[in-house]
Amino acid sequence: MAFIEPLVIELADRVENPGESWQTSGTIDVAGYTVGEKEFMLDHGVSYDAVFTNAGDGILLTGLVRAEVTGTCDRCLEPAHFDVAGELQEYYLFHEPEDADEDDDYELLGEERKVDLAEPIADAIVMDTPFVVICKPDCKGLCPHCGCNLNEETCDCAERAEEERVMGDDNPFAALKNLKLDE
Image (cartoon, rainbow, N blue to C red):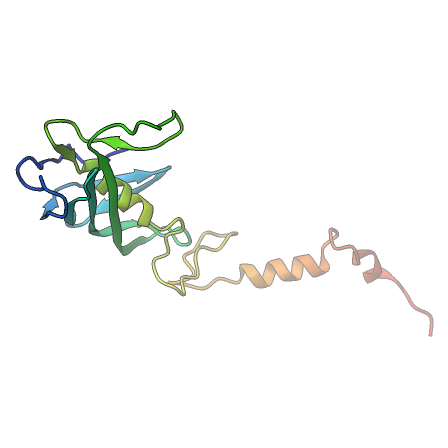
């Protein structure tokens, strides 16, 4: 799923003893990413702050990922800008656990002590991307009848649709409109 080129970090001689930590940060120049059928542009790439900590039996990766994102508003189809701030959290074991079964989900840190940050960073960005993208909280969207952007102009489609609904033949009470009551 990684939309980021490999970003391999060498940990050899940095966090060799339990309790030792090492921090790194940077910015990755990436233009955009896709979630499902939605495309997002990264205005200034992705920045990250990561801390690697030797926990005795493995390396714990924690940190933050930030990006300024531009997508398409799901209501009016205009550009929508939002910030993403995701968390990094991964655990890399030094050795395969003795009691591991095939359902366990873990990653091994090889003898070369290298970690590729591309996938954890990409996952953090995608996980913090909103499912519904809105350009502003009070976005009115598009008119479902004529397609005009209701944030920029008004139309009378809603009133006409209401009149047609009340007076139309598909209304269950439409048969009563011609009913003559004797007084």
